[in-house]
Amino acid sequence: MKTVQKVMVYAVAGVMIHTGVFALTGREVVDRSEEIASPDTATSEVVMEIQKKGKVTEKTFTLTAMDDESGEDRALIAFHKPSRIKLLTHTHKAKDDDQWLQMSSGRVKRISQSSKKKAFVNSHFTYEDISSRDVDDYAYTLLGKETVAGEPCYKVESVRTRGKKVYDKTVLYISEKDWFLRKMDYYSKGKLLKFLENKDIRTVDGILTPYEVVMSRAPEGGQTRLLLQEIRYNLPMKPTDFRKESLR
Image (tube, rainbow, N blue to C red; front, top):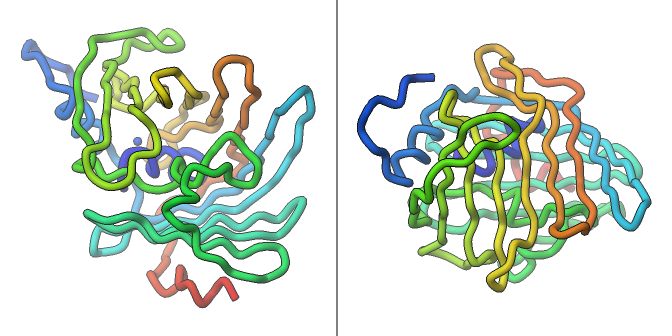
């Protein structure tokens, strides 16, 4: 799976060797991150806590995802509380993802490209954030190294060069130790807009899995926490389990 969706799908469901003496480029660091072990399928139970203006709203959902034989991913987020809505995502290589939202009324609408920057279920995640990220759509620059939560990381700037650009740039903090994404900064109009952090990272069936993912608005703009309750990898699934028609 692709870098950002790997975080969303496999981290909430959803991105170990010595570095050597040769300097790496930004693209090489990202490629190393893409190569770490990942499952073919994932099913998870998640609690979403949205903190805004001193108020906390809790939602729960099940997320199922698979990487099919074509290399394109499928993901379904099904909310149970407080309302029952679903988001289905089909990712594609070299073109934008398809996303459909089934609202509590039962009506299904397609998420347009112009809506990608809108908030997903009133959280700090946008539809763009929970779409896939094709590494070939971006140019990468290694900015140096920085420590994140006590973990030495490569700091890599990425700028979208193909397709619609929602953010000016993002900055990735990828662990030197295990190549897993620890943090991601999002910039808009030249300023830091928000940042994502992967926390409580555990190894489940050989897969690095953060049990807490936090998206925070900068500065002091609240945050959304995704708390992993249960995760199962590599259960049998098929692409027909993720048909648009199944939303109706």
